[in-house]
Length: 230
Image (cartoon, rainbow, N blue to C red; front, side, top):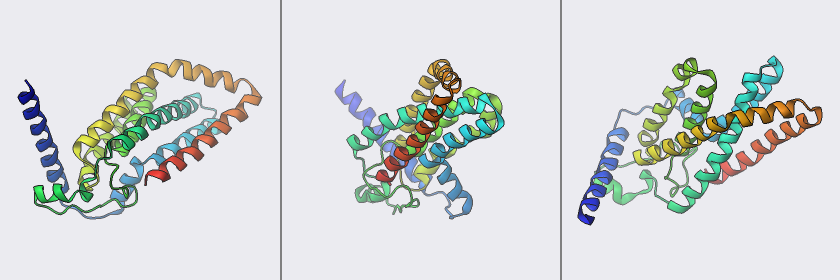
């Protein structure tokens, strides 16, 4: 039985490496579109989305937009609380920093995303996939199929882009998808309670200041946590 598990594990490792090699060797050309996609997947984009949804909700008097803000804030906080310890615990070398891997695959892997993947030992899991998947799932849960059609492709794009840029293994991206999806489902399950909390806060003038203070603190500590990882 142990031999079977070892064989299966070795096969999965080889598959992971071969998929990385396949993705990385696709034709590469740096472009503004690629830079925008990378920026869209990173934590600051989704953290700022919390603020913009909240501000737009206030400006247009839209409960739907305000609901998204509190759901996203909750989902991103929980994701970060789970994601950060995983990064610290596994300390997996990114593909571009693993010379033995590159010798094994017979290719040179460069860091094509130095702006958000400069720490060589933080490969597992992929933060871009975590943030994108949890945020897209939460938004789609509130706006339905139009949001799925508009944003759903971003998850698939991030799963491909991170190995393509030489900064993650495919297994890193799948782990990020699993984590983001789990937190997304949890957030959807708790959404009635979170939305009722927001309604209670909005019904008390004094608590509105607390609400915006929480968003401000969320942005401050969120960016601080993100800067420690880049």
